[in-house]
Image 1: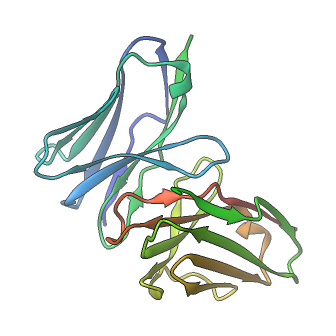
Image 2: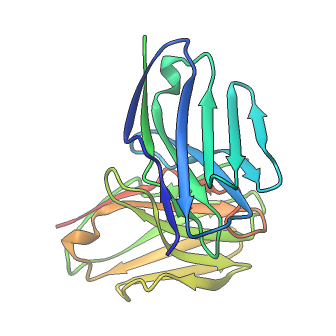
Length: 109
Length: 113
């Protein structure tokens, strides 16, 4: 069955550094992959979508890569700020979206 | 207007009650979704409506009954729930293609006593 893993449940990063989150998947070849941000008690917010023929996508301080050979996506936040602290969810496309368990990112001032 | 509005924000109900959750979007999106999320878990898909027709039901118990009265509205009718149904219920919408770029509401935090 399709499986999606975000291999860090929690990640602490010093303010100003680059935060890198990892999403791995198995038993599937998605046409695209998405990243969402979720704050406590709120719904997820769509951040970026990257398609299988795109190696990299950027949006302001965010960068996503998609390696279909490694079956992995990396999500980077550069010049991280305390306001970036949240849970980040990776989501796989299929007949339905499968969300990873998320990584709780803490940016330390 | 780029919002998905859910009401109520919080709901406490007994196991014999009947209640409804409401969701509204005015972005012209043609796909709408109900998700259930337990604490520290990812959202789990319950139902998908595409062009106002139910397209996916993830084997959800019949005590949850979805309804899509029109392209802007989505309801979730609740009846005879169990305490384990307590969770954050999220509504989402997407423009046309199912599963791309979901816009989520803030959710209804449901407690079943």
